[in-house]
Image (tube, rainbow, N blue to C red; front, side, top):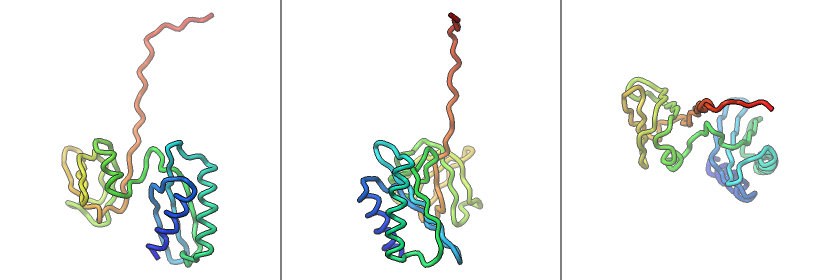
Length: 161
């Protein structure tokens, strides 16, 4: 089923002119959640998400790939984007990430720190002065941590007219 779902989502999204950033599929006993992230050079609007959602929903109904009731969500990756593949991680070396692993690494499963480096098999995250090497195959979820930068205060005088 996974390969068929991959193909259906990729074909639908790219066929509509968007880039598939990635997707998450979480199956439960009586329901499922399919979250699809799309992108484009022009950015993503609500209308873009709606268009892709309608097409994927129709294709899923025809193919009957999800055997239980499901929720389909389509959105842009956003500023706190989920990272799916090594190329995503490579683009954000030096940035702050939040990583959750399926199994513990040195006694912990949650990491919030700076992505120091990555290769085809692992990432290295610095957390509170310690570096942790984490294989991609144990990452349950990785995402950017968005931090607002404070704007400098204006030193100019206000004039009233």
